[in-house]
Image (tube, rainbow, N blue to C red; front, side):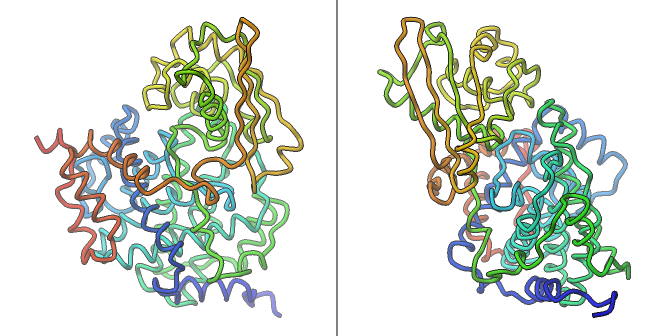
Length: 460
């Protein structure tokens, strides 16, 4: 094979991305693809209501001409690149976006904003949008699975660029040769991201997902204009930069038969995913407590044993609402204080509450090597609460709720959609949007479908 000959695995992947029809998805994959689209939209809209995002959207769109792409959660229309940037950034703000442990991150929120924006720009139908999201998700998730990305790198803004680029290429009807070029171009356009951002509560981290949408759409545009990539960008970027080893065969093993998109999870708690395992253990513990509540003042200490990735989130002295979403001690303290995991439990007023801070300081979080060995197939956590009177309560998590082995019900996901969407769009628009997204294949023009869905305050 000459140095300019594309590797066989990449030809196979490009052919899959360019030629696979929507009907080839398994029923489970198709069901998840619909819900990933439906779940992302209100999560983006709710994140867009944050003061920083409202300011960013206004400043970014200032002086730009209107486009057809909906800036979700606002009354604005924009160019698809701008809508993808803003939607992706808003979508991770509240930590309610879906994810996938097998892909080591969050494919959906890196792909859906760009795919939706581009579909609206083109006037694409719902079936083509759904196919684009599903194939962009599957391809990029498999690429991430095939490398052991350095733990210092945050996965947002990396493989999501590829996912959005594939989705755009699908919507444009690229052939396998063009798709291969898109894959190679997009692979080199990710960010050198830092996981420390989430540990520091640095909100710049949210732009990483916006970058995936913006640069993914740009990658497809570059290929349309004749730009070219390396022969095998993955060997360089995913085998030497993001990670020290890349297994290309693992990308195509079971391609079209095993669907990683069907193995995703959805979030009901507004925290980093690894915190969810600890919250599940707390809920298990509270199930044995009379009345289901423990007064924080009665608690002497809280002991937690967890797998390594959950144990990393050990910061006790959080100072921001965003940072609070990545702290196991704070999450336990605020849930015990509020009696639930509402958005209010992670707002700045909760962070500033001295009683919550005092309880967080009494949490001891330790990694257990045997638990880490069981991850990611299991996400084990043991939790013990010791009261001042010496009595104890214990709770456990083996599989985090929302994972394929313990999925949330459709009714729970609909309740989440309505809870996030109704304050923004009102009841009637929220129901219209939910029903349409869950039956997206029937939509003839996705751009037209999204018209009239401005926030209620803008409508009034």
